[in-house]
Each structure stands twice: as C-alpha cells, then as structure tokens.
Amino acid sequence: MSATQWLTFVPVAPGLEAALADEVESLVPGVKLKRRAGGVEFRVDLPGLMTVARRSRIAESVRVRVARFEARDFRTLEAGLDRVPWDAYVRRGTEPVIRVRARRSKLIHSDAIAERVGRALERRGPGPGGPAPTVHVRLEKDRVQVSIEAADELLHRRGWRGEGGQAPLRENLAAACLALSGWEPVAPLWDPFCGSGTLILEGLARRAPGLLAESQERQIQRWPIFDAETWDGLELERCEPPEGGALLGTDRDGEAVARANGNASRAGVAEAARFEVAPLAQAEQRVPQGAAVVTNTPYGKRLAGGKDLRRAFHDLGRLLAHRTDLGPVVALVGHDRFERDTRLKWNTVVQFPNRGTRVRLVRLNR
Ligand SMILES: C[S@@+](CC[C@H](N)C(=O)[O-])C[C@H]1O[C@@H](n2cnc3c(N)ncnc32)[C@H](O)[C@@H]1O
Image 1: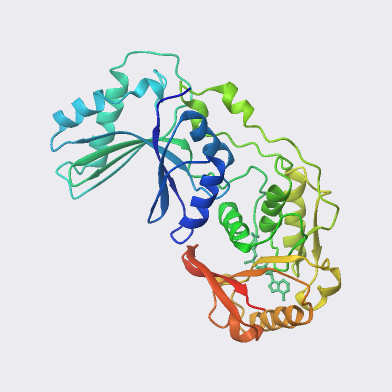
Image 2 (image 1 turned 120 degrees about the horizontal axis):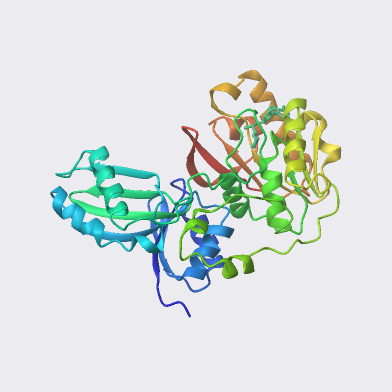
C-alpha cells in the first residue's frame, strides 16, 4: 500500500472544471476534489497519480506540489530548496527545465531564482543523468511553491496529428465537449464540420478505449520513484473497433478531410473512422440513423466568412429540423448569430476560452 499522498493540480480551460472533475473522479474513485478556477486539486497516491497522468483526456497537464515555504531573501530560499525531496523526482546529474513565476514578492528576479534551484539540485552531487521532469517555482507574496510535472503542458498532443490545418480543436477540449455532450458511445457519432477529425478521433478513444495508437511520454516516467509495473498495468486493452461508418466526420474542404484521414492512419484507426468530403447541404443522406452530433463550428477571424458562414449555420439548422432522429446535438460556437441562423433553440452548457475566442458549447433543445 502506498501511504504517501501527492497534492496534485490539474489545469484546464476555465469553464471546463466540472467536466475535468467528473473525469478525475471516474479515474480515481473516492478521490476528494477541490475545484479551483482553471483546474482541480486533490490528494492522491502514486497509482492514482499515474492513472490521472496516463488516462485523463481532458487534463492540460498534471503537477504535484512538493514544497511550500516562505522566503524573503536568497539565504532562506536556498535553505528551503535544500529541504525539497528532489531525489524522488529529479535524478542526480540531470538538468531539468526550471520555470519561475514571481509576483508581489521581495524575490522577484526569475533568472536568479532559477539559478538557486539549479544549485540546490547540483549540491546533491553527481548522478547518472537522463531526462528530468519540468520544475515549477512560484512566488506569490513571499510564499514559495515548488511543483513537479507528472504530465507536461502538451498533454493534449496524442501523437497522431500531422502538420497544417485550420484551427484544429485541441484534443483535450474535444474530449471535454464529448464528455459534456451526453453522447452514449454505443451510438453513432457525426461531426459535420470535422476539419482534421479531432472530435471523431477523440470519440473513437471514448467508444473503443485502447484502439488508438498513442505514444506520448509522460513526465512522471522520468521520476526516480516511477513504478513501471503499475504503469504497465494501466495499459488499456484494445477493444473491438466499431462498425465502419458509426463514427463519421464530414467537411466541405477536401484538404481538411485528407488531413483527417492522415491523422486516422497515424492513430492506427483508418478503418474505424470515416471521413468524407461533403458540404452540409449535401451531407444528410450519409448521416447514420440516431447519431449524436458533436461539432466545432467555424469561428474566429480566419474562418468567419460572413454570408458563407450564415449559409452553413442555416443548412445545419435545416438538416437538424428535418432529421429529428439525431441527438443529442451539441455545437461549439463562437458567433452570437449561430442560434438565429440555425432557427433552432439551443441552451448553453458551458463557456470557455479557445484560442483567444470565448466559445460556448450549446445543446439543441428539441
Ligand atoms: C472550426 S473548423 C473545425 C476544426 C476541427 N474541429 C478540427 O479539430 O480540425 C470548421 C470546419 O468547418 C468547415 N466548413 C465550413 N463551412 C462548411 C460547410 N458549409 N459545410 C461543411 N463544412 C464546412 C471548414 O472547412 C472547417 O474545416
């Protein structure tokens, strides 16, 4: 039994804390969470921490707080840094990335603080070296907080995305939208603005866990106390792929669809996900009976095409009014006129920032 509990913080876009909290609670049953603005905080043992670092699809990163003390001068800072149990997290002889953020404190010079952290690590003596997790030091009103990454800030990268593409949705945001959509993964799923296929591929990961080949290292694997046996036990079993066409993405842009197919191939699911070129006005017959609809509508400066966009929303509204078998239907929207142009009633589920735009996840009210 592992008695040590790690104070863990998992950040997410503000607005998505509840979706993340539900996911962490399902990954670590019985965990007691505190929702913070922009994340959730909880204490968890090493297997639980590994589970969140390895399995969360909504998290942006995972960090543990390993020390907290006050320091108004460098001597006190150095003494505090010498008390951090570094050997558990950072192998001797390695040089981790050190990120410092200091505000409203006597010690404010980030480079000088980072240098003290480097020296504290060196004082431990030589060692085998190798990759190290990122170390974060935060000073706020003279209180120092030292955190170590268990999963890094690029956790949304699943390892299958190719280059290019217009405004792809971050995979962890796609995972949050799917979690909030009410889609039962046994049902078919359709994304009418699929772009590079993010929502459909995340949907596949939800429908058939372990099916996607994903190869991203987590920083916790660099910790000296990392336990490979527990980690290997967290490997997801490959489920049967759903029948072809059950998860369908359509888009009017042939290049976007080619990118989606490339991503599906790299993820090893070229057979299980279907992507087709179809403008909304011609998509209807392709959509499986009873499919849920989860989509990221065009928005933002590059995609806001005036009339063109209004027509797309209008076509979506017409299709949904006609196909009453489809549902639940949720859309990520960045334009106020979405509701008006679709001529349907929608309720806002959550709002959050995405690439500098305030977006809303709305659910069709049938
Ligand atoms: C915000 S992007 C979707 C991004 C996607 N979620 C991803 O992660 O790559 C919107 C997509 O809508 C498509 N689109 C715009 N108008 C359309 C229409 N009338 N019919 C079908 N697709 C359309 C664009 O080609 C673009 O790929």
